Length: 328
Length: 265
Image (cartoon, rainbow over all chains, first blue to last red; front, top):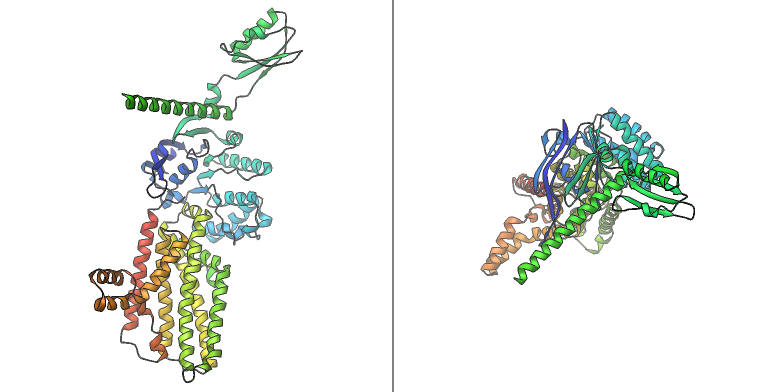
């Protein structure tokens, strides 16, 4: 069952009162299943925050439909089952950590004893138990982010929407958050998160969507991504000059050389076998064969580069057509 | 005020927002500054009143009631607009509205928080005013209490005006527009009268439109009657109360209507 569905959602913003509309989302469709951890990736300004705000009803979409827990749009019923951490943590500086959680709990209409127990356990979970009486204005950025995470968990949400949750966290905080998200995943919570720190997304997500040009360019599970790509292998060779074996067209390239050794990179198992036998046939030695791990970051960059190249091609064609129409 | 801010009775989303709005105001320096200034003005009326031979008591009542009214309005304009903008600028608003809190709850909560705070301050000033009256042995009359009550009602209406403007403009503009409505609202009836006698057609139309659109705030001003201990017309307080409450409700309804359609970024 889908917890969240976006169907051809579009959103534009006008620049100034009479300014032209700038399209951020153009027919974005997405489904997230119960218990899934979904990562939303994309460059700055791709529309990740806008997507999240449209889901939560903070922004009104120009077109399309948002379905949350079977309800059309962000109803009160749906919102009571969602925890949200925005790109700005949005905390009252005059309150302390405990009071801020109390405020969130009251807005969720939780019973006083539930608020009390969750407030204490969450402050402990995010490492702020000892700072609960300290005013938020005295908190560091990282501490505010931790408190924001605690607030997002205050209603024990079924769906957690986290916009850049790793930002402002130090390496220890990042690791703690990763652990927390993995434990929530084990409990069957559904999570939608966006982040620029791709390895952190890779560590917790089941599926990722790459947002560019206002739509999801690619939406695949991590398993599918890894299965789709042939893993590159680096072969270190000595005893011969293997430069004649390098053939970028075939997928074999020389990446490094020193007086004693050469490192060749090839794509896929078949090419590697051919390369290794060629080296032995020529009387050389293979010192090391090292498979390079294909990361989500590589996939993201590949997809975004392809998307921007498509965009540039389309623009070039449009300009050409315009010039042609003008001259004729 | 602290008791109100921590009262568990206020537990609906709008009430929760109102309570935390009050907590925010308690920390505001402007609240203290306006309060101190208001007290000083009232006490100075006691010190300086002997200079107005034969009219000491009238001056004490006039200055006291004017302080209660004007400093209340000033507080609404100075604190209220800042409070609304802070929620937006510091990214607090998306965090609140991403919870099961409707935009109507938010508008109502901010209104109640501001109104309750200013009403409590108005009551404190009224207490100091009573102290000044006792010290100067000025006689109390019923219209003085009516005047304080109507000031509280006027504060509610002006808070609703601020809430209306805050739903679609910047804090500076909403403060400015609210002040303009306050000033124009006190003179709209006089302006209409002036236009009827001396104005051209265009001026008459503008003055008439202004009279009907803007709140008639002169209705909430019974200082002159209080100073001279004049009786009020039968049913006057009731009808002004209905007028003030209805106007406030309409403005809050419009604020919520506009705010519901706004994108929260």
